[in-house]
Figure (cartoon, protein in one colour):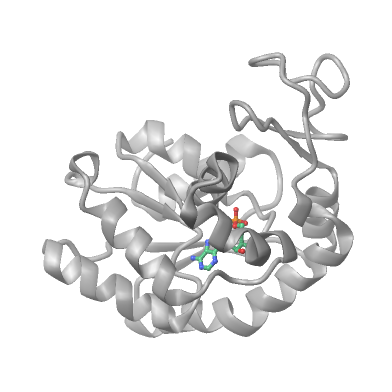
Length: 211
Ligand code: AMP
């Protein structure tokens, strides 16, 4: 968990290698469906591009389907789900059916000024999904993906007005989710500032593992 731009996607990809379980990012799944122009993609585009949350019913179906796949039987890292209290209840139901409770909820934190700076400078590769930052992780050739050579883009929801809306939605709808997990005793807050290796080490130790 954590606000948009705090580094969930980047760190989840690293944890995936450490733990050997899939990284399930609901944002990535939605963006892939939008790119394919599938029925789901067309239905969610307006929500995603304006920084609002996709309705809980749609998200519940999506996560139930994803967590039932074979690659998730040994575990998974959820990134970007659950984001509302209703999604917490859905996840409990799905995991109850699968007989697999949540081990731990890690919440990355960073000051809001840092988050806005990170998101406004973020550039992504629409082809392979690699993520760059204009200041802290620029590509070798401006505007071109190092990994696959495609032209980099700014996510439509990484513009300043939409960033503000995403932060508002985070505070209104997702902070209560963190509080629910805190009450359950499975939430660990992890400082998301500093270099990527340091954050990765803190996350691993939050899971009782060495990075
Ligand atoms: P992210 O990549 O996690 O920042 O997600 C990008 C956008 O996808 C969000 O601003 C929402 O519009 C949508 N989204 C991702 N995950 C969820 C979720 N669990 N519930 C509702 N909307 C979501």
